[in-house]
Length: 86
Image (tube, rainbow, N blue to C red; front, side):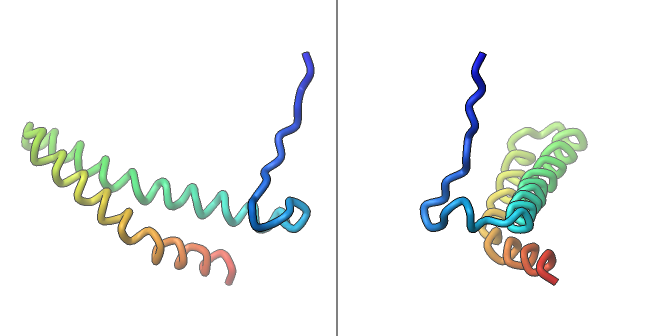
């Protein structure tokens, strides 16, 4: 079996210009954002559903929180990136 190497190719930069620090910052920021988008919405959805047994209300609240955090993703991302810079 032959194993091929996959390189990340960004359209604006050559792969030689990306340092490991930038890659670690991108991966950690993305992981934190993914957790911030999913955990609160899923927690509220499940909490409301288990407490009230009302699927419609819990889905509406879960989607609302999810899209609210998605709408605020740029400022949250900037804050997390600034946190890793300093």
